[in-house]
Image (cartoon, rainbow, N blue to C red; front, side, top):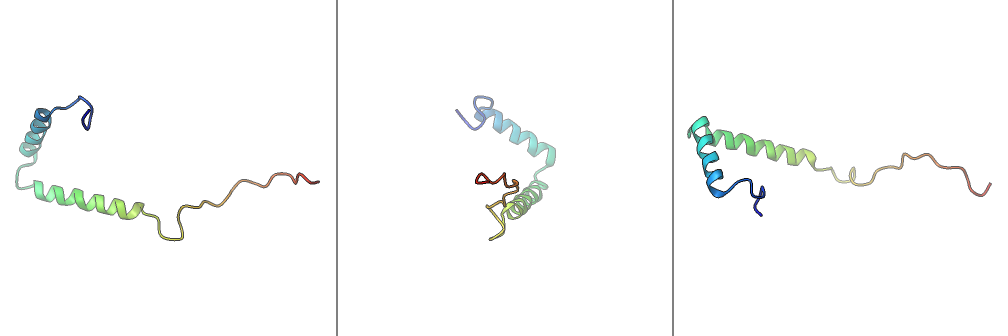
Length: 69
């Protein structure tokens, strides 16, 4: 299976690319790609957790009754 299963063949993806090229025009595509790249870069940098603030969550569960009493 491909990326999206059997939904798209190579010809489908080529046709979609041609439609995008017609809609946005060849002059606007580099700017569009740059904007998408910057957005992905910002998303990745924001989704990283800073060192020391990450993976461990403090236990918020209240302590149960003491079994020894």
